[in-house]
Length: 116
Length: 115
Image 1 (cartoon, each protein chain N blue to C red):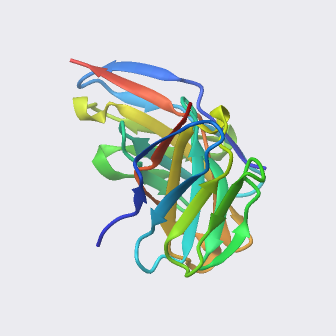
Image 2 (cartoon, helix red, strand yellow):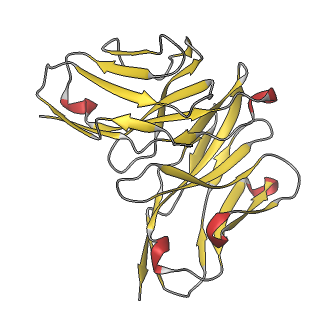
């Protein structure tokens, strides 16, 4: 089937604007992750959903970042009042939820956010 | 908390030459280790993973990695590099966290392949 898809692929925002980034996980994947990848860095964990429940949001950098997955499938990462330091690639990944939590995460192509 | 160090930011090899990318991890328990590859504009693709068992792990595209607990290392190797291997490579360590796996990535090694 189809892999993880993300939209838009590119987003340019003026400082102070709100943005919404969408992730469509692989069908049937219970787990969904958001990562932030700054230029020249590895991805950094932002938040984790198990179905519609947000079980871990310890990586969200500020209260301007908000994520939701209301029906346990599509997820949206929202950034309010964007700042230049928010410029990064935002990656979404999904996985099955297997016993012991040992499972492969499948990544989408990412959304490149540029804040001017 | 777990962490990953990839000491080489950029590596250049000739096509056909062998390759070794270094990775050192820090984690208090038995680690779950991964290597991912990222081509420009693409998402991360899993090359291989180590959870337990044989310490020499075979992956896709002819890559392999060896887990050495005594050295806290998980180096990636390929005997003969192809031009299409040019990409950025990320080592990662996973830890169980309340029933799911929380993955921490290194900063990546960018591989350039010259003819």
